[in-house]
Length: 292
Image: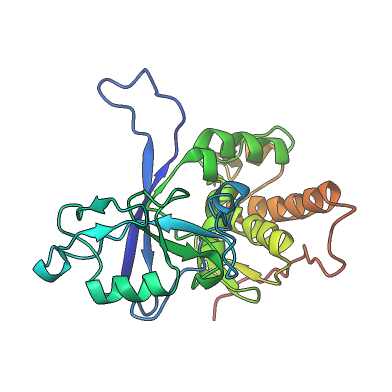
């Protein structure tokens, strides 16, 4: 009952030609809220492109705005009426969907109807940026890799961070997790990832704090899954998938997770030396769950 959406993430930027029929290029993110009736997204941070859509060609004192059509809801007979533009042209309703005449007259009186610079255009509603309920842009359900990264870039970035070693096959892009954090957290939120893996979420939290001055904290939970097994002679032998990590001294996934956090924090500090907030915190505490 608290389901919000199923997001489609475009995780691949090129086809895998070895596939017999189709090369899968997407994954899904299931989004739930604790109470779907009250939760509301913060929205995606506005860019110059989205802000440039708002202009003020008529010097309205309420500030910049963008125009929108007058269509609302299903076609109702009372809402089917012609409109005469300031130039005298009569405009018929599009497919019978339009504001009620009363609502239209109120908005016209309040200078919220735009007929174009010459007063001859199809009437449109003025939507003021200053009156938006939230500061960000409402996210759509398809997230392109150009915005949030793809699997290949995530693998390369993590490999670079870990000294050229490839410890994880399919890590998530930092930008992907950062968007999720941005949409539904506030500046002092605690973000928990119950399957930490490569600890992408920890880096995403730190980068979001850097971006908006927040003080979010993260809790990464990871079972100490071993990347080796003990043979009949009692000798530790690396597993096929964990050989590289084992040879570099990592005995379990959580050890790699912690090292990734250390390296990510160090890189953030090095890359932002001149602009890093004085209270930026890239540290963490490590707890082990012991048997009762």
